Image (cartoon, rainbow, N blue to C red; front, side):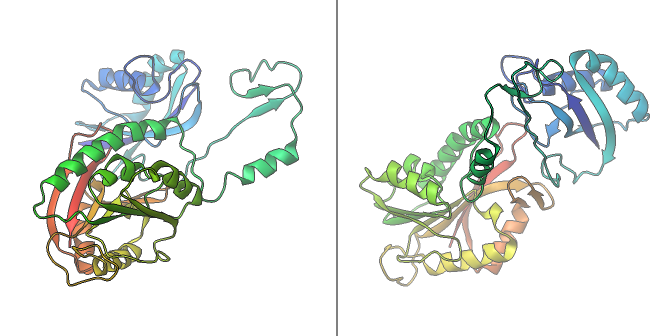
Length: 357
């Protein structure tokens, strides 16, 4: 198989967005269909990012695999644009890459530009490429407001919300089945590491454990978690803390790290796992007693087939299963059980779960 990166320009106005949907015309669907026709095989495009409805792109990056080498890239670009240009899509370049290249995970940066035309007259040339506001804007106030977007608060776009709708239910089901398959697992106290707004705790943990604690570095997320969980008898506490500053008040028989490890470099992950191991206890009490079977660190994350890559947009690392096992060994943890899911959509990485002690 040969891998190629493809750079794309398009006007987003007539499209429902980049990603293929059940209904509507998408950029991905049109390019995939054209590539499949010209290369005479089914082609699947993986993009660096998925633009929303009516969003334009000046150099969208994607990649695809093909059985046979493209002999004449210039000719292929011309052929593609013959079909795509009338549909407001243009292929800028096609570049041969090695098998470790991934449009999303190999990207070094992404640039988003938002255009506002602030005048009384209706724009003609940029009518579909900018937001027209007639009322005079207070630039100083806008700059002050822009500062509020920094810090710990994370605002999910439509694509991220769509990803969560797909991944979260799948993750909950996978974890629930996995936990129930482990014999003699104690259910006294659980810790949700970097638990955000309490989504996992509310959907799963408060129904399985007698007491559930949570910490996250984002104060806004912790506040939301408290609101979501305060009515649950099993809710212990939620506090703002980092991986380094978290105060281990209790020992736990279940410590959950769900889509967390990717945000830590190797040294930081090993350090936190060592601390977690020291606070595993079948009783879940104030002081750690001698470890007995039934207490685990449950780590769930995406896994690559080969190599380590980093998503520059989220600062997230993706590792192979082998790399994770090596990290567990360095942290002094043993793999008690593991499972994985390969039923994710094509542009999602596979998920693996480990029970460690």
